[in-house]
Image (cartoon, rainbow, N blue to C red; front, side, top):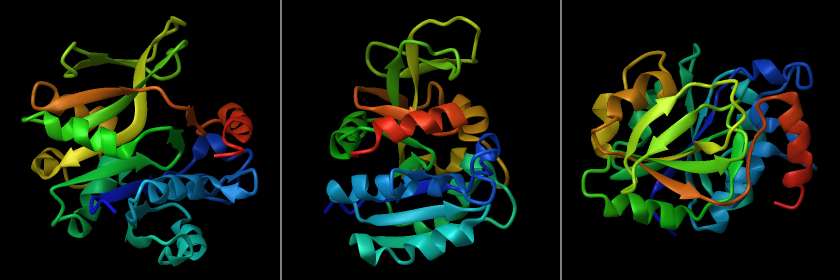
Amino acid sequence: MDQVKAVLLVGGMGTRLRPVLPSMPKALAPVGEKPFLELLVRQLRSQGIGQLVMCTGHLGGQIEREFGDGRTWDVSIEYSKEETPLGTAGAIKLAQRDLRECREFLVLNGDSFLGINFHDFLAFHRRQEDAVVTMAVVRVEDASQYGTVQVSENGRVTGFSEKTANHTSGLVNGGVYVFSHAGWPGIPEGPASLERDVFPRFLGRGMYAKEEHGVFIDIGTPADYARAQQLLRFA
């Protein structure tokens, strides 16, 4: 089992899903008969990654009651609980105390699923001598709802583009990252977003992307959540 830890960002408010999940954290949204988050836990465990840190926030007690210490899934789960909303970057910074001994660690968005070989992803990151963070990217036919990632031929991230009305294909953030220990100074204390506040400051400073080709789905909206019932039924 790879000793790298995986951080799961499950503290979001889930505002866009509230019409269909009014009193449940987004990560517990049922997909078939299982909570969405269980799919991520099983995906990690199936690849030998069993040390997990769940960054909880909104209705986080429900997640802790559902997953406990992780023994049901043969994993070990620690919890990093935010008392006020910290955003994706702030949540990672709060969890630093659980990650101090890690040379690198995985990060997964708790509201998206990507078919990925985590070990190949880690190996790619480790091959880049100056890598601080590596992002999994996915090519989609219509990138208008995501914003896009610009990547050079050698895999360096060179820029980001905001969402546009152009329904064209492009590379988008797949919601899976690996951070090296050297990245901690670039993550601020307090509320902050990875996409808005952290990744732009890593451009030109060891930020890479690896294109993945597995199933990708974000359950952040009711329409995509409904689609997840079809795509992930057998995951």
